[in-house]
Image (cartoon, rainbow, N blue to C red):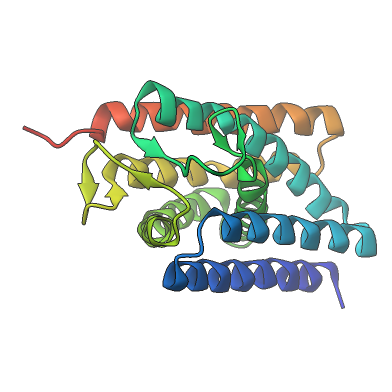
Length: 223
């Protein structure tokens, strides 16, 4: 089996497991424990794949995603403490203002998106890939927020929302965040470890500044 097929099996397996977990958690209101378990299992799956196949491409994407996931804690601090719009369960373990599992949750999500961005960039070009990913992000977010609220993972308040669940500014933010991934994936694919660390920090910073800018544009309903 060639490397691309192995990578697609990994990513599709992660997507299916994540989807099943999120839907079951929402149906039975399983709370933060389900989110933590899913995040840990998905990361273990990636690490097991890396141990088995020594895949430098997925390894680089994972390092990028994990560092960006840690840096995303700043975005959570902004949403939880500075704006007061994001609420996590009080009884779960926290890392700063975020659930302790959040960097792992982001690393799993980002490694999926970075791989897909890389593959699309090679097949259709990075600009077209960016537009496609932005569209997917805009569709994926409402479902993700719906499942998160009814699972008991987190919820938003005191901002402009669709259906009382999905923050409008986050639809814009998530679309712009994933739109740059074809370029980050291209740079990361052959980067050394120091460059990967810088790219991870830059991706985390991009997530923060895009979220803040989107809030300023679409955080409150137009009057």
